[in-house]
Amino acid sequence: MIEHWIEHNESHIESFREWAQKAKKDGFLDASEEILEAASKIEESNKHLNKAKEGLFHK
View (cartoon, rainbow, N blue to C red):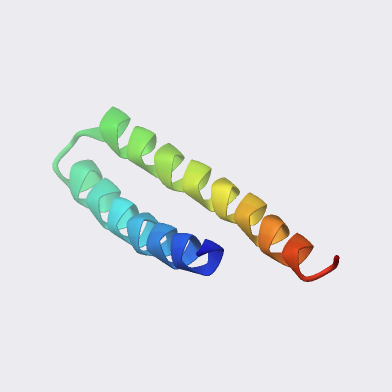
């Protein structure tokens, strides 16, 4: 299940970055930065999920 969550998050990260670029292009700089920050938080979440996944195989 963890692998599914990681892959799902990756698709969101990609989408967020695309929308951040669109927002920036349209002059919504603050919104663009916030969307990029959200993508960064999801990347951080995936780091924790990967650690959890690794822990499942070390018992």
